[in-house]
Length: 427
Ligand code: UDX
Image 1 (cartoon, rainbow, N blue to C red):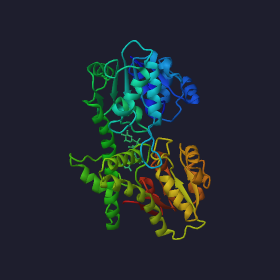
Image 2: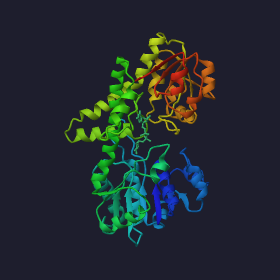
Image 3: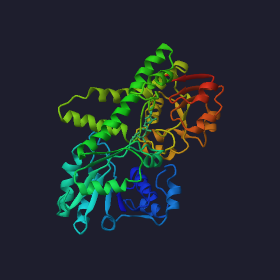
Image 4: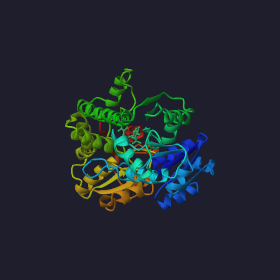
């Protein structure tokens, strides 16, 4: 099939290149000229494992443009994969989605054959039908579900393993109303060996939020129990191994530590909480999940102060700035909260991350400019005696931590074994 993808960020690029690998032709659309140029040189504008190789291998089967019209006219199906960030008050910002819908609508006006628009961006229940549909109809002069198809197909990709997740999903959820659109999407997703769940559109939208909220809840729950375990001298990772053996629970995603970051969990939780409140609900569990997550990184500083009571002018090494390993993404990273607190206490911070140092400086100029950066983890170990581990990069496993005070937010086993003093947040 000929597929166009509006928004060439993590989700758009991975989804598009995944479809290319499965034999489709893909046109990427982005307003960012630089991204368009880079993609057309078969280079990924972001770091994601396996993406560059795929882009090199399938040159000629895809290209990028900033021209919506051209992309829509030359494809049968268009995915909206633009971002839906939080506004400062936590509500969802639909600016990019609305703009994409407007541009698609304008192009649809000129199209004779049946075109399908699929919303993949994470949007609150009711958005596809209540916000996106009217914009598409207004600018195209056509009727949804009749003159063009409209569906909602959430993504469940984890950064760092996004391509693998795309090609081997646990499930594919498709919110669809008209039969014609359903048939085309069934065909597009035919190569996938995964359960396919067809629902109405707003159910598909809610499945995405409920999934992320549940996973985030699992982590905050693990952290809360973990904090109690810590006080009792119990290893919470062993506890969750035991708890996870119950097939109703599952052992995955039960790692206690300094909490979750990233572009999805915090933003989606905030949006869902705001929506619930707008509906007159008081979502106390969801609010507590966020609260635990905000407190958790500060536990690391508490532990540090147990060993080094006064941080004034103390040199502290930080290993890991990315919100998780194998990504250069620093959005909502716990490292920001930890480093900010260290600076407030007067510490001097030297940090290292294999991929995320540039992004950290750019994203968080307030603290990013006040710390120094090392060229390697070894350099951090040479320079300081006190180390905080904030991201569990593989490289940090093979270091010699002997003689160091290590406070570990992510349970890096070699540190646990070799440090002079070792403290983990929840174990
Ligand atoms: C997540 C969802 O997994 C994915 O399905 C959704 O589409 C987008 O959001 P992602 O943000 O890429 O993906 O990261 P994920 O691997 O889920 O990790 C999120 C955060 O939780 C990380 O900061 C990670 O360190 C933390 N985490 C994860 C824990 O603290 N404990 C765990 O057990 C698992």
